Image 1: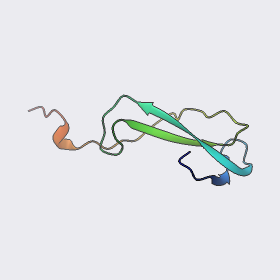
Image 2: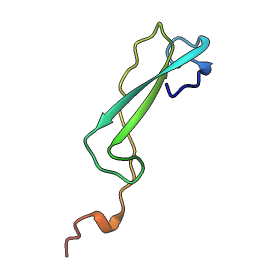
Image 3: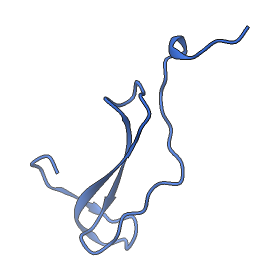
Length: 68
């Protein structure tokens, strides 16, 4: 965590408690995160975080190869 505690509902066990963050990092350069794409999953201390099945990212179209 970045110094502040987060309080909320654990998405796995539905307990109201302090939450921890798990970062799933992907080797993709995107414009939504820097320097690489990631997803954050919040969970309580008793639950094991599960990697998201899908992720959405932002890429500038000018960075894509254009086929003619």
